View 1 (cartoon, helix red, strand yellow):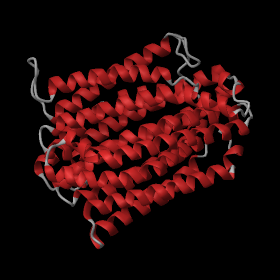
View 2 (view 1 turned 90 degrees about the vertical axis):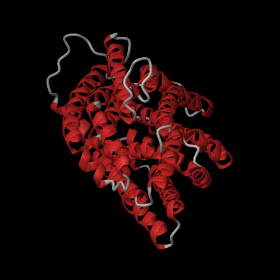
View 3 (view 1 turned 135 degrees about the vertical axis):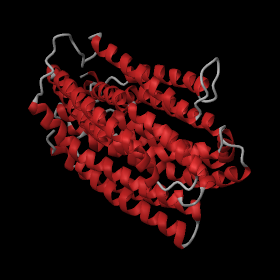
View 4 (view 1 turned 180 degrees about the vertical axis):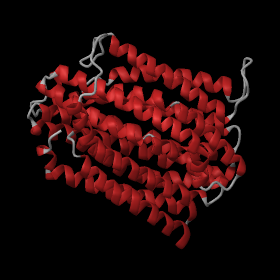
Length: 453
């Protein structure tokens, strides 16, 4: 309850509380995304086909993870409510149920996704046979690692809901280190290890995820967190907790399917432009994901603090936290946008030295600069709404923007006008502007204050 007691609607204290939770998440997400970027840079040495192949696998993987992401939204919302109300045993029960549900979903998705991988990659519409084969190789290994992601992400969601964002930072930092070492050894084959190319990058990622899972379980078993595991705890299904998790999680699951379906439709439009443009697009998306770090870190903080405040019956504190998180997060997004505007070509060069890819990427980075503030606002406010349990609203907003506006506008600007890859990124800008406006309107209307979780 320390975070809530210190709020008192005093701006300085509110800001400090938000930063206390956001800073570890920011560090964790930044290091994770830098590792992902390093993955792509190392793969990029193999050629544009390798970058394109990894890019083909991204959205199908996240589509298979939709159930787990949804359950974790419910876990954070429910644990934070219990934390705010001082109900520790209920928070621990919710953590155990989330672990069971996530592990089950991870196993099912891993088996189904492994065998569906060739069809999923073909559905993305690759024009290059090398890129297709690389995508299949990369994605099948990623699918086998889904159960480890399921367990780790459930633990992270529970810890964040309880106000502990530092633990996830520590075990994900360990995973990133393992991943980078694995990349060095397995992509090109060093120190006697086999040259596995794209498959090696994927395997290194999965090994790192396994290490993170073991470390996360060890942290819970130590018993020093608000939510912890103890030998002898009951793991029987708790129907009340499961119902409450799914009440928030089901709309979030629909939201995830909407997001991934929209992103796949958008990616299919880009895939028709050829291997070089697809590789350029994937590089830009990789760097854009780095900019998510800022919004997601403050979104995690606002979600946890919204839930805790509402659990303590203080919606005024909840709104103060959400606004403070948005204000600080958008300031960071503006700074990132300035960096992108002036340094785009230099960043692209780190991935691939092809002159045409650098030229196209530099143009895209200037559009990305304008995307930054709107994207930051949308991510942070959506996090706050999910923390309050208002997942239906975020689902409807995603349905309108990601499933309808982005792919349709992309098709319009890519084919009808045509602006090719530039047009695809103009559609992202339109999507983010609309999403930021709709989420902020929803927050200000205050419907989330009366939602039961």
